[in-house]
Length: 481
Image (cartoon, rainbow, N blue to C red; front, side, top):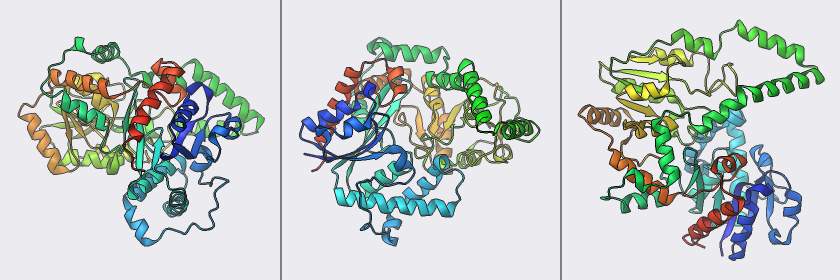
């Protein structure tokens, strides 16, 4: 029997995650703590099947509020020894707070961090889980602290990463290491020669979509939310709400004043220059921020200027570095400067030697086709480049980091070495790409944890329950009791 923490799982009926939890308990495992999202918690929490479970809403956990059933009076503040062991986590969390605690300074962020460490260290030491199951790579502060404390105490983390390009899930224990199943499949496929016809239909379709320069479906969906009919309805609702709460005139004044002030778009356009495809160059598409793809998956390169500085110090004198902003960066938050895109951010990039920001209208697929190599923290564009037989410099920890054609770099020395190998004629083998796609097919599963994933995957609730239950139960067998 394993004592289990479930982190971030929805209790919405349409997803089937409650049924997955029931399947785990049918196999004699015990769920002792559940941070939940969604609706309908009352009926589930009161059921005999989940008696004794401590229920903690995801929203309360994000806000730093404890579960009602937990007595924190005996939880001690973290000492210097524990804080020192969690220094890497602290650094990551302070950047991660850019999303949920964006208006709070460093000193207050640290105090919130210490309070969260106190609570979750106390909870984990008191309830003693054998396994913690996350619905995603931890990135909402409290879940990353849980992940880090469990890692420190040798408690197994089970993590799922959704690969939006394939509507698949990869299971892993550490996002920095990646999927052990994928690694094993790659080893088993070594020496084999897969071709496109050997892949399953969805993999073949994805490969063909990539070569046709189709806009990724996740980007299409995001743009629909902020451009077109849905955006118009959202704005009408905002106007109506502002009239009701008497903030309409103030918001209107702020909106008009923005037109005449410098903002992200005007700063970007003031330094952007057209790309010259006759010169050799590295293409750097920036990651959207704040988001888990850069925090925690970027590590120290959550600071993307640091990545570009390393590239600028490594690139041959006759090469350029073309940087382009993420196509969705200005949509959800608007054009105001903020902690991830502060005043002077784009100007700092443009001042670096051999670095050019290119206009937003420049096509990303055109940049990929004409570049010598693409560099990214952990972005989707890295995968798009590999599919087009372009080598990729990866600074973070994306799911495709073990793919042939990827160079993992983290300083000037490793970056210079990778560029030298590329200049000597290194190429991405289509044969090895098919081998990687086959390994990915063998090691991933169709499943989802939220409504967006359900919509993209197209599989039924029953299939989701079956796939997740089988995968988790198999992984629990390897966890120490």
